[in-house]
Image (cartoon, rainbow, N blue to C red; front, side, top):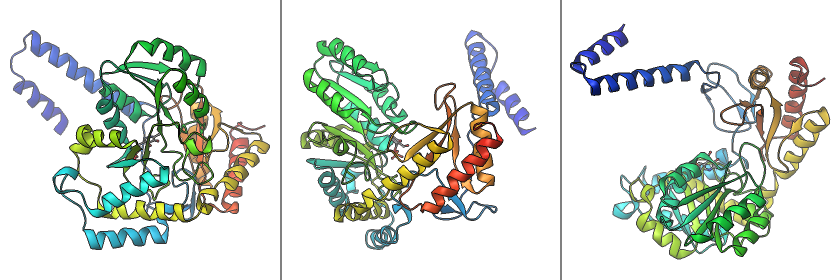
Length: 419
Ligand code: PLP
């Protein structure tokens, strides 16, 4: 009723119809229709409410205790690690709830500088700059770095935040086919006419669990005089012998120029993002990067979490290594059961099902058996490539993993995904 009244009121308020009013009326009606289509679409995204800490075992609001969680980016289980929580509490007590300011006005505390130093040391780079999120880091880098005389070459399956960051810059844009080195080479040749070339790729792709061929990318970059940028959100902390990421895993730490990553996944899971790389680039970002210049500083508790997570990782490589065997257990048992798991050696294990409805009903049925996983279908992944994405964490027990495989096998047989 209130909606009808509001629409009538808007109609009166809009004044007498003329050509401009008519155009406005039509476009706002189109807008409403589009919104209702979103409501009706099968890919409408709802939220499940969790009533406990993030971890391998969850309690859902309104019941559902002891659910085994296989859909968080909590790869190392640090989100609820006691030392990470204690570090957050200490930072909160000593440095307060927040800064009420951007960094360059009165929002920089010693802990922000310490964390930036630590991030740079962790990645073996010259300097680092913090953002409120990696989404912001990606939104802020391309525009600050590239001019209309430059070119950016981006993998077609890069994360939405890289795509949006590139949209904001005025450089010439090239999109190469996913991990296709022939296509990248062709685009690099075409881009020789520009002043500077930047190849941008996710280190590990979150929908498929596949890892960018960084060795080949860096060789091409060298051949065609380009810089390499990687987004390491699904690699930092656990890929490579010491968890430094995809560049360490593939032996190209000295060839990748710029890394953007998040503090909101393996590194404690609170929030925050960063860019790390050459000092002149970081200096430039402090002067020019809009999400850094015009948004509040990271809250001390968040800084405390990430700082402790990095300490734990730099003390020993045991945590970084702790997940690999569990990933292997899940991937091999699921393959033996007859499922196709996309990607290789990455804790993102997409169980490929093809059909969108099948992915959705199987995910629902897995929850009925106490296993929390999420189905993905078009437009998040290409049509016909629906899947259930399983994410393994270092804090899953072997028993958790075996229960997940058993539930998949039962549910897969029930719904015809397995013979
Ligand atoms: N880049 C990639 C590849 C991601 O998966 C995500 C988050 O989902 C982001 C960037 C954004 O990270 P943040 O949550 O820190 O904004």
